[in-house]
Length: 407
Image (cartoon, rainbow, N blue to C red; front, side, top):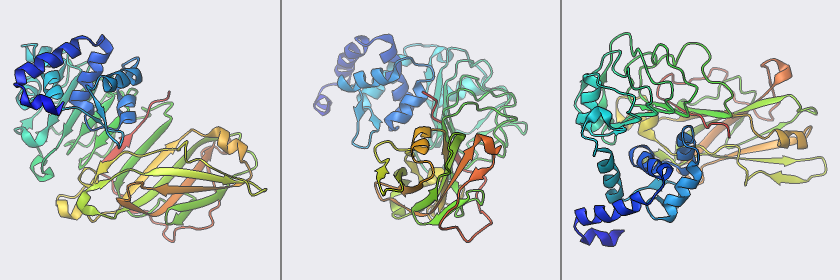
């Protein structure tokens, strides 16, 4: 691909267009989605996000990688060459009527559609770098008509300071967001609540960093979720995590009867080891079981959960960027997986270890809480070590929610 840089761009794009035309419809749509939304995203996360409305995303991504249209990096991230990205943008922009395009990323196009309320059900995605956009004053019904909007991303690739109040909403917030929305990323979200009648059943990712949000929605919106996670500034494990420990290890003894296992909650406090790199590279949870005979099984190959790479600036709720780098962050997530492991080792001791493989962050303390159906919402667990603090200090803003769909 680098050799093509010596050829005139128009000639390159013509060659790439031949490769694009040879793809089937599903592969073409997945490539366009990657170009607009998933570039730089972890492959598994991209697959989960797109699989809500695509039938064979895993196969399509593999095919695109094999055809060198998409690159999977050593850290499992999806990348596109700039020329391929430009080709994808050009294909979408061949539709001359802005509101009839399937995806929008040009700041002026996004501004025109939202401020003039020109949204249609042809628009499937909006991706806008708000650090490059002019300030917008939107109305409560600016998204009305976009019934097929699958992803909405207002992010900042530049200074977060320049993005403060980049998008204004009326005091009552939004009247409408698409019910098919599977990815919502809105930095500096200006309202205290999402759209009044928003239905979240298709959401996989919600990223609302540095927002004024106080409540996501009314009532219960998410059902049958296999796992979910939040990341926000904080330095204390909430006291309802009955098993707590200083450092990256926590142990507990499982009850003799695990038949009513419902879900398990995890929590870890992270501090940045190298804040200049401005990221948590990820958090991997390993679990090991030891039975009465001393036999040990480590679940290193079948992880309970691996958290995404998220930048410090994405996590912060601070106005000043320098202050954000000093913050500890609290990671909480749950899963309803691994019933068979608990059944196999019921009555035995289990050890959970939290690791950042890239060593960008340090796990200062961690906690576990297991919920059983027959306990009517109560938790179980006796920890060999407990946190000395009973008053959790958790931020209320700057949240990231990651919700993989059930397979």
